[in-house]
View 1 (cartoon, rainbow, N blue to C red):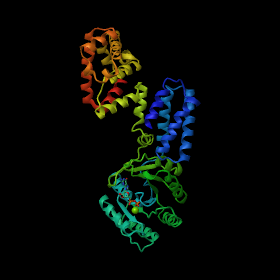
View 2 (spheres, rainbow, N blue to C red):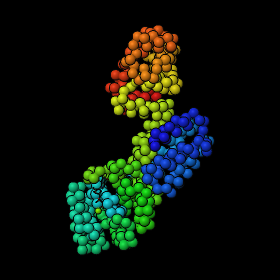
View 3 (cartoon, helix red, strand yellow):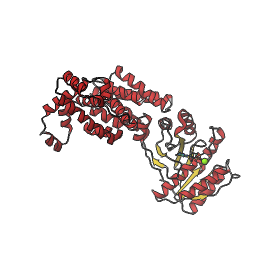
Length: 441
Ligand code: GDP
Ligand code: MG
């Protein structure tokens, strides 16, 4: 899909402005990208409408190119939607500051409780106590005990025969007496949302009066995340979201859905099962992930630099797969250079120092040289371009005649190509993209 998106960006290059017509197809792709990333349908509609409004506004302001502008807008809007709000944990309360963990069973509440404990101890220098209100599964209390130890925090004992409300009162009492800064309260989850669970956690909320009520949600949850988030939002005044299992291969569209539905900021992301697998949520990066592009900003940069993203990617893939760099690629590169405005326009983008050096080169001659090379390669058959090693004396003469050059020039080009091939092999895929980016300034 990202291929398609970048192709559209390219197609749109050269069109003068964002209009109802050209924006439509692009927005369809954006909509598909979001749905594929498991953003809920209603959220997608809303988001796309907002982007469209902004994009059409851009037309009035007269931006660079419609494709660039639109990709930029989509990315910015995604990041802004997911990134507004305070990110770190709010501890502004009479100690102990209570943090209540809410979410479905298996979302990662217990694991995240310990991760947060570690974070608050190490980064905020707090004295942290944890307690489990999960009285339905004896193993859950033990689990919290184990991970709390790993985090270096203290664990307050509870047992399955207690009522969660009583556990909460006892834990707060203890935390006050022992001067804990923070009390983290892990709760029970269910496989599906049910009334009993919701009433229970509401009661806990009333007793604990938490400064943070965090909704823990599995990034792999997909479309269902919206319904879960709605239910928790109706039951509790959520103050933040923690998105877990972002180390999985989901595109994490749940982030956008949950953020939209709850209005609460996404504070952290879980990125491994281990206790240190917690990161401050990075909305910019996540926007790129949802769109299915590792770094859409890089794409926009490349578009701005005039690089043909698609063929560059193809080339990079070719090099990576070891299929080799042939004269067709060489030709594509020459043509790419032409589409970027030729050598002299590239020179303009280089630093002054390099320009001074380059000033000694006869630009006109260099441009002519490139055109001749193009002519030579165009005189070759498809087979010859793929397998330059078969080009011996007879073929060379034919090619030279076709391009209107001397045989020596054909030789020179073949030598140059060979050197380039060696260099490409050393650079591999990533290096090429980097090089092209650098060339684009
Ligand atoms: P709870 O039922 O909400 O308390 O969920 P748990 O904390 O017990 O986590 C459920 C499972 O998800 C466990 O196997 C955890 O190790 C795993 N888990 C939790 N957070 C993450 C995460 O960020 N990444 C990965 N890969 N696994 C996680
Ligand atoms: Mg648990």
